[in-house]
Image 1 (cartoon, rainbow, N blue to C red):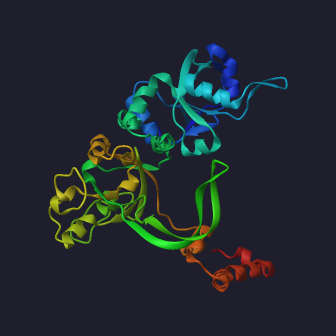
Image 2 (image 1 turned 180 degrees about the vertical axis):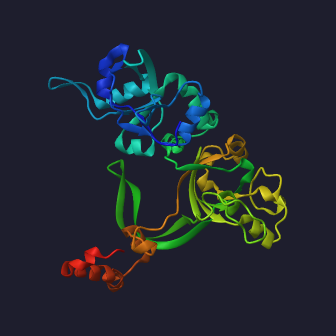
Image 3 (image 1 turned 60 degrees about the vertical axis):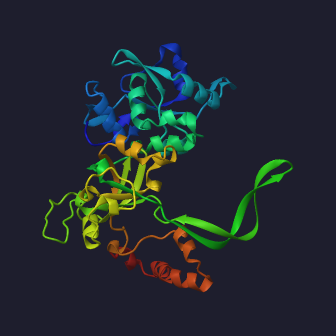
Length: 387
């Protein structure tokens, strides 16, 4: 498999169901309109089934038939009469799956419901996988969490989102061993603010969301939410002392956005080993956290519960670390902005709202933009200036 996205079939449920029990026929030359991102998911597919030719190259493009994206945009009609609604189609496909006949391969494959990536969820699409692949892939995806589902109130919506983290598109991988991880507590910062509070109230015996008036409430902010510290040695960055590490691809980056099973975190580069040395931290027993490391030198990633989604379903970090693989996917890293040679960023209303500006302060903030807009209208030469 090449390190690139793979084209997959994208089909309408209403078309598939017309194939009946024999399966919907995929003719030669059928366009593959969706993609399965290069991801931890695709890497695992190839790893678990090395002899099955999960991916193939055709006309210099990579394809796979292991997964199909199904859309539920249309109902089944006869004339102007709806025979099967989109809701019924979805329920039937989720429960029973479907069959596909591949004309060029002269074989029929059975597909069953698999996962919904964040992008697919927004569009109402769903991924289906070949039936014989399902069990191994889902055992890997759940990390044995399903055995805890009978003992707790399982948040199915969250679980669906978290098992799909491995489908996120990645640009590369990085190795972080389970013994490299130190889990510390999240830090909650409470503060009071005046807000338009929305609460649940009963109106005519029915629970309704109601926003009535400004209230003084206490808000709690998790200041390290989804953040971690990663040792610069993992990124190939040389420390300040005389020890020299080989420069890696990311030695000049300050942040890597990483994915793993039930793990999602923005990891900021720092020199953990030097921090330990400067503060005379030489033993694991001096650390206020949880780990499976046997030596202080092994600690290279410091994270919190907010980054490890597994802990929302099973609070035992040792269970997670014992099942964790060492290959993490890199989704992205920090880059210069596209504006004024990386010196400025494009702001948005969420950031501006945190400043709580009054009218005059807002006017002052916007003045450079207003002046620039005015010049654009008056002098066409501005359009030729390279920013």
